[in-house]
Image (cartoon, helix red, strand yellow):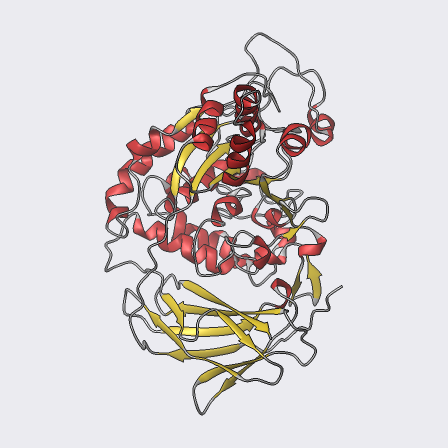
Length: 504
């Protein structure tokens, strides 16, 4: 077991621009969303739309889950395979809290109204028409249903088999059944052909599944056993801090950015028609098809099992960590999910080297409690994520000059450094801010992401950051240092560079 040494000192410095930094022009990641349409999926989707300039959306697919299914319209009764659902809703039911298959189109109608303004901030925002062409209906009749080929499952299969060599990041905001059906169709169509081995290898290397819990049994029953080399990022713990019970999980210092006093003026109100559709506590809204959606009723939110809430308080975006993994803020977590980032932090499963999981082994030290915390790999970023979201809400209504945009951060020495014990490493930092704002830096060791805690100090005479390896560092071990730069605009925006120092 690796021992983690904790450093409580944070280094904060203010640096003026040294030179202009060009943003790397890398291929954008491809992604397909599958969603069961719960109110937190709606809120996740609105945030998702604000970040569609960062990746290539290649599918928006309605699916089912243990919480939501349509039924077959014939009165067929169904009993959930998932114990939690059976305990809550009982057995032999014909449908469950189904929100329909039009809400994505309705939100895209509102997105279309703000799209011209979004283009003022980034020309890479896709049009509403282009996104609308990607909306498909997948396997929705019952929880875990994957017997039928559907428009959505065939679309996913087609993308997995195409000639684009980029990976496809498959987001499961609900169950994995439509994804499973796509893979099953590929198996049915090709498993008896001579090139099956090559096709299976191609698909396995191409697909990455980010799943929020197991919301049906199809991963465990089909995907895992039959496609064991498909990479899976399994978030069963960390997402809760960005979901319904956030008041019981999020550190007190981060909670104000989820409260109505921040959400109301900075995100919900006076930010265009799309954000009028964002669900918050006490906002008077009610989702059709879901009788469990009580949060909009102001009379019912002062005392709940999740805590007491006020108007415009955040409800849930439990699925946002899935797509936040694709947003390049400089943390280089897409390359390796064990590094941690806005989507959380995951460690490789001992049973399956292609599966990354959260949980106790992926805990970070919570400085507010002084204890290892299974949610802190996600909660530590909430302020930065919420400020970023607020800035993008501004992009819906403000000119480029009137809004704020994120700085670019640069470490002159690079982000991969080799060092020996006792060696003092100097990091010279620079930034480029598109709005001309100054940037303040905080540099801190991310102990849990590597093999321990690097020693970080600030040299006041030379105005530089000094990094040293701990004396007990072993050859080959890596130590992560996060360079965090926040601009002086509002909402204040943060970007990063991750410096990995390896012991020679």
